[in-house]
Image 1 (cartoon, rainbow, N blue to C red):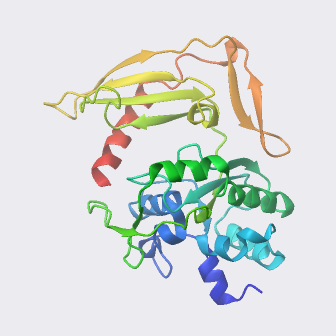
Image 2: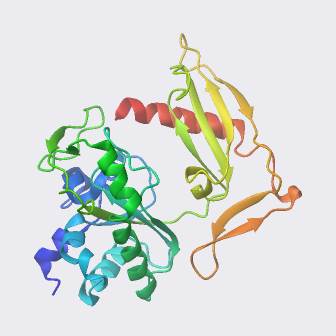
Length: 304
C-alpha cells in the first residue's frame, strides 16, 4: 500500500517557498539528473513547465514488477492534479541518476514518451513502465559499461545550491554490473511548441566564448534532439567589450524537402504535420527570439 511515508519517498513536486519547497530537493539520487536540474531551475526563479517527479525509490520498489500498483498510480494522479496539470498532456521523461551529469550524459539512451493523456491512468502507467524498462536496455547498459566511471551525483542531504553556488558533487558507487541504472521519471506538462531548439552558451565546435549557438526546428524538439532532423543554426555574436550591445545574428537554414513539424496528437502521443509553405513563416524563430534565447543560455551558464 502507498502510505504517507511511501508517498513522500516516491513523489516530489517542487513548489517555491513553504514546506517541501524546491530549495529542499532530495538530490540526484532520488530525482535523477533531469529532475534535480529542473528543480534547481525552479529554485532559481526560472519559468519551466510544471512537473512532478516519480523518484528512483519508486523504481527500486516497483520497477522489476512490470506494473504500476493502483495505489501508486492514484497517488501520482493526485500529485499531478495538485501541481495544476489536470487536462494537460504530459511528457513522461527519463531521469536517471547519472543522466545529464558532468561525467556521463546518457544522451539518447533512455526513453521519453510524449503526449501522454493521464487522467484515465492506463496510458500513464504504460508510459512509466516504458521509461523504467529503458533503464535496463542493452544500449543503456553498454553505454554505462563503456563509460566505466563511478557514479557522480549531487549531494543528496544538502539543499539545492543558491543560484551562484557551484553544484556540490560526491562520488558514489554506480549500479552493480548488469543492474539497471536507478531511474526516476519526470512527469511534465507538454508544451505545444511552434518552434523548439537547443541552445549553447558558447560555440560547442570552435569554442568561441563570445558566440552562442541556437539550433531550432518547427514544432516539438524531439526530431532535433534524436538526430532525425537537422535544425536551422543561428550564431549569436556578442561584443566581448560590451555584453549589453545588441549582438549580431547569422543564420544557416537547413533545406528540408518537406516542411514538417511534430505536434501533440489529438488522441494522445504525437503526430507529424506537413505544413503548407504559406503556413511556415521564415525565419523561425525570429532574430529577436534567437537573441533572447541566447541571452537566457548565457545567464543560466553563469548561474549554474
